[in-house]
Image (cartoon, rainbow, N blue to C red; front, side):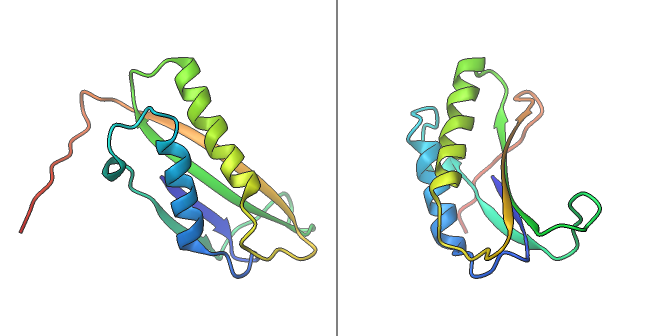
Length: 119
């Protein structure tokens, strides 16, 4: 899961947002282990919304999931993440209209690789 936000949003509590999103995703019952959720967050300094003549900001969540889930399962995941994002308030965006976005992308199971290495 990748969370990107416009840097005109201030004091966004990164850890709290990532933890809330991870819990929301896990609580769908569609993820077998919590350690299968990997989330990172970054502020975008260079961004443009429309023609740049507005007071807007954004928080965009992009989740890449393996193929094979039904439309209903994907909708459940999207709805849970969106609800979490809408309820999250640990940031400042005074005078800004904040666009909240959730995007699901599917990764082909047949070509995705993952291994855990203990050193």
